[in-house]
Every structure is written in C-alpha cells, then in structure tokens.
Image (cartoon, rainbow, N blue to C red; front, side, top):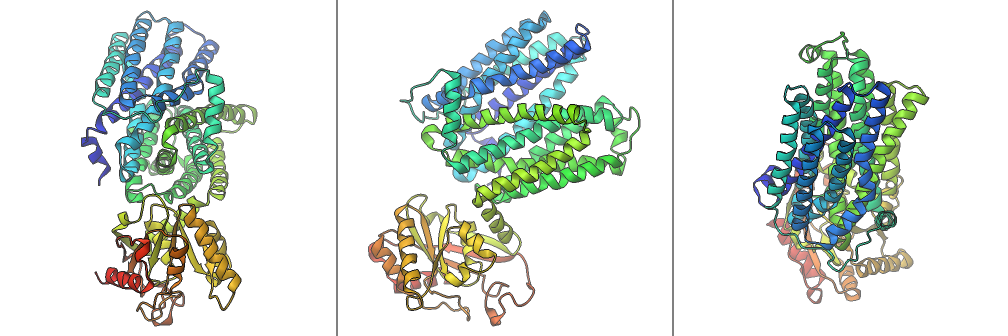
Length: 621
C-alpha cells in the first residue's frame, strides 16, 4: 500500500491535518516573535540576544515539565476528546497571543510562547500514542513517515511565512489573523479524529512534574531496546537542532551573507528529511524494518563528512542571490550533501519512532512516548550548549562543528548498535534480501503474532536462516548445526540471534540434549523457534527426509507448527548446486525467491512425515 493513501482515510487525515496545522502555527508565532525582538529596534544587541535565548528556553521548558503529565493523560483518557480539548486551549492561547502582538508587548508574548510550548508538550504523547490504535502494523512505518514529512514541511512553512508576513505593511494584522485562523482550523480538523480508547482508565495521575519526570524516564529504561531507541531519536534531534540553528550563520560566514540563502538552506534541509522519511516505506517493505536504521546512520556521517569538504569549495560572492548561487556546480554539491544528511536522518528516525509505538506496553505507551519527548528536548538543549562550547570556548568554525557532528554520529551509532544487536542483525538481513535476492512472501500471516510456535522449513542454502529472519515480523530462534554456529567470525552473528547449536546424538549426547533443553526454554518463553528437520543442506536440490526431532520437540512443548517452503534459492552462490557453494563468484544478483508459509498444524497432529509432505506441497504450489 502506498503511504499517501492514508491521507484519503478518515482514521488518518484529520489527525495529520491537526498536527501539521499545529506545527505550522507554533513556528509562525515563534519566529515572528524572534524577528520582532531582533529587528524592532526596541532592544540593543545584547538585550536582543538575551531575549532570543530566553524565548527559546521558554518554548522548550514545558517539554520537561509537562510531557510526563501529558503522557499520563493520554493513557488515562480517550484520545480524540483529549486532542479536541488541547486544540481548544490553542485557540485561547492564540487569542491572547493576538492581543499581545497587536500591542507589541514582549513580556506577554514570552508568556504566550511558554503556553504554546505547554500545549505542544501535552499534544506530543497523545499524538504518537494514537497512531498504533488507528493504523495497522503494516501502515505504521508509512504513517510515521507521512507525519514526519508533514511536521518538517510545516516547520519550514511556518518559518518562511513568518519572514514573509513580518516584512509586509500590515504585518501585525496579517500575523494575528493567521495564528487565530490556524488554531481554529486545527480544532475543526481535530473534531473528525475517530475515537481512540483509553489505554489505562484507572491510572492515577501524578500532577507533580518533577517526580513524574523521574518516574517516566525510569519506566522507559525498563526495556533496554526501547530506551536506546529513545536515545538514538534524541541524538537525531541533537543533530537536527544543531544544523538548523547554525544554518543562518553558515550562510552569513561561508556563502556570501544574502538572507535568501538561509531560506534555501532551510528548505533543502527540511525537504531532505521529508523525502528520507517517505523513502522509509519503500525501503522497509511496509513493516517496521530495523535494518534501515544503520543505513540512516551511515548516510548521516558519510554526507556530513563530504559536506565539510564540499563547503570549502563553494563559489562565494558577496550578496550573491539564491538563483545565481545554484548555477555553480560546486555549490550544488554542498546543497546535495546537506539534503542527504537530512534525508538519511529521516531514514534513521522514522523506524525508531515506529519501533517505540509498536513495542511499548499498550497500557503505558503514551508515557513511554512522553519519555521520548523529554529526552528529545534535553538533547536539543544540549545541542545548543555544545555548540556554544565548541564555537566560543574551543573556537571551532561552523564547518568544524559540522565535522564533529559527523564523527560523533559514528561513535553514537557504534554504541547503540553494539548494545542492540537486533539493529545490526536486521541490517545484514536487509542487505542480503535487497541485493542478492528479490523476496516475495506468501501466507506469512499463518505465523502467530504472539505466543510460541515452531517453524519447519526445507534446507536449501547457507542463508536460509537469514531469509526467514528477514521475512518474519517476530524474532526467530534458529536451531543449526554446531559446526556452522561455531564458524570463525560468523559465530558472533549467530550468538546475536540466539541460535541454538545442535549435533547428532551419537556425536555428542551432551550438546544434543542441551539443544533440546534450549528449544524447550525458548518455547516456554513464548518465542518462535525454526528448525530444518532434514538435518543437513540438500546437495541435489531435492528435499532430504525429515528427522523425528520435531516430534520430540512438540512432545515436550505442545505448540503449533508452521510449515515453510523456500523456493528459488537452489542454484544460488550459497547453495550446493554442482557442489559450488562459495567456490565461484555469484553469477546473478537480485534473483527471485519466494517464502511460503502454510497453515499451522495443531501439536496433536504433528508427525515428521506429514510435515515433509506439507512442505513439499508448498514448494510445488
């Protein structure tokens, strides 16, 4: 399904419109205020700088104080009604903002900015907690991609609109009319958001923002994968905030100083994130694909490094116009690098957001998302502090700051991926299934979405486990020959995926028994276990006889058994066709492979012979 079809569905479009209008309005008002402080002539340079920093702090402070409370409210109450109340509050806040704008009263404008931040802090958790309720698992990545795109386009639109309206003759009237109209439109859009039930109606809300902040973060830390995903998302916002903050000074110091170029850079960066976000749907195949997260991280650093070198080659002319600037090829390389940094940022962050929504406990999902918002805000504040430290204390240039970001991204990626092996595992699977093979799936809905089950499959090549791991939406524990599981280098990979080594009982009774004990433990824990009952790779392309180990497994743990058929792998570089596995260069890439899953067999009906017949039927179908 194309992700844009979601915009034609009532369960998504009103929500998308509500959040996009809110993001546009926030940035319109905030940037008009910043421009007024900077260019009204009321304040000297020192006062202006202090007020601008104060304004930035006032807008982000509520995300620390109120996101945890917003997370509790979003878990306790029905979400569409809660969103309508938040959007009504926006109308009231913007009414006060319109009055303050009309009288050009900066203290009141700063108070309004704080209240806007408060409203956004309350909206964030309910916004992302609602999506898994209205979208299927296959729509979740596409939905997050469209929301990410809409958010950055709205941020850009609000920023540009602020600059345009501020310079018009009737600027105050136009701005006040715009912010009020956008608030009303946001409320009207929210009235069409479908019902989304409360996750935990019995929740007792803790209204103390400080104690709840600690509880919220500690709650998110209980699941290490989710918490490290939150840290990775926060790092994305660290990078994004640094780039967006420094782009005006970058245009001034390196590109000739024309204000038009600031708009060009902001547009390129925002469009890059939007395009990268939308690419996630294509790259992930409609599921929450963690394998593209390392691709995003690699791209951020690769193009960040090149941005450093390309920026030293730009053609600089004082006051050069935007149209003249893009006529130089050297300048286009710099713009392309900037676009790619942000595009790969989109590829990096979208699946992480979807992962948190999908895997967080339903009862407290909004509170987990609130923890994410708190950490995002913290890292954005840290980005400003680090930038001040590096630029003013260590006297780095802006280009050197960008270079440090790229190096830091490498270090952060290494840490996160070394801690969450699933990211690198999925990355390796994704590379294999998008270079060597074109994978088609059929009947994978027969694999239970939860609970224990055993997968049985024909054994055709050395990458069968990777192909199945890439197809399954759930982690799979593979039973494999101990000699393969202990091969140099790759043994670490098999350890990551928690493979279960086994050998013939006569060869090592101890390893044989340990394998069956491990299988039993995994099934008792509700995991998916995959075995290849032939016990060895086929050397003829024909299926070998299924061993009776499957019957022993099911006698100990009576769980459903799902037959799988692998079609099209025989004859590849990784198979034994003509005895040439790994002995020649691959003769073809992107060959067609099909993975077919049959209906689950009840445990009381399991027999090795019948399962072999079912797998043969799948291959022949």
